[in-house]
Image (tube, rainbow, N blue to C red; front, side, top):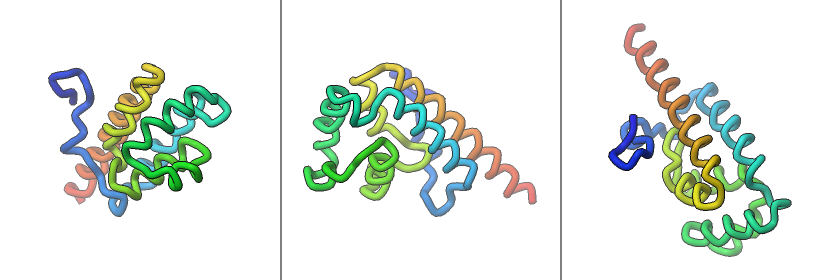
Length: 126
């Protein structure tokens, strides 16, 4: 589902971490792997831009310990800025660095939403 501005509507599919299945967590990890091809500390200028964007959400000490996109996702989740199936904040940051990363997030947001719906339907039918 998309909002009027073309971005995925994830407000009704936000899954808290307690109810996220292993399959949904695996999909999130796949997304992070794909994102890491575009955004990694070794890609210094992109990572510096990303760090600047992260400063709106995380303090300098916290950001200094983040060594990869997996750690960033974990920290943003801990700060309740994102959750499995709701990556709006992350998407806004990375799309300004490389549009393809927004496409990756959209793709995996939809996969996670479909998995959530599949599991919810299965649970209701049992």
